[in-house]
Length: 322
Figure 1 (cartoon, rainbow, N blue to C red):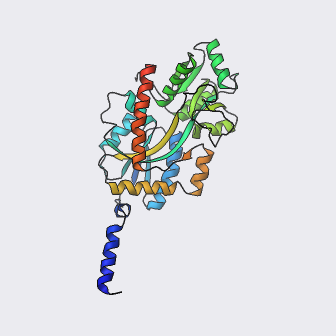
Figure 2: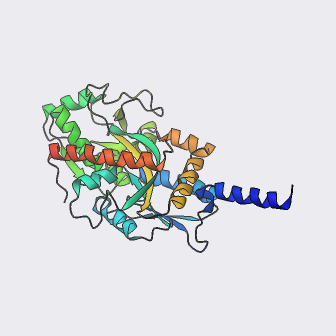
Figure 3: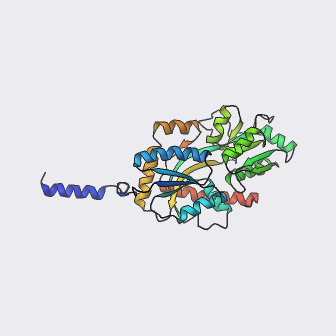
């Protein structure tokens, strides 16, 4: 090949090289994934596994920073103020549009202050009860609640959080009155259901299913439209008699608005590659989390739709944040 043709070929390849390859991270700084939930909960389990493999395929260290509080407002306020350089990311989930639908005093704009990168997984909530509660199905639980109004206590992870709104959805659709007790996160609330201090809750499947398998909790149903591959014997809420009861827990990650597209694409490609790792595939299946690996555009569209959905639930339930 003549030298001139070689130079032309190399130049053309450089122009065609994807932006993901051009995006670089500062070698002296880790990538921080801010998680708006306490350590040990369902989100925390998934994010630590994903970032382990992302760190490997990006050859760049990740740090997971748990920042619970204010229904996600504390964490996402921090993320919105961070430099848009790809070094600060936020673990976003169904709780993000719930936050947008319920909190009016946020110091940032959920609709415009973030760029969404990848929907990583989807999983159900599992309706669980303490094994001492004398019910084996959703119908029996509803019948018990109707026979003894406000005698059953449901745990949730804070007023106006998703776990609170799912209980409100059950109250609306089943026509029951139950008491609710707020906790700081899944790992705290599920512990009290196991101990019998509260009787029931809708728990994230990565947290609930290991306890169900060990006999510490009894599962009654899942909230996704279809049965979970991780618990195929559990009926859905739809199958249990509530055709409009659907709640999918999706989880992914985002960055501050203004993050360069090349950085967004590189992070998206890294996450999608990590989701193919055999250990990730196996562990996600065990936890009832279905791998997604969306494009940035698909996650952005999902967030916009979910904000409208949960605004309607909030309007109907009358739930007000603290």
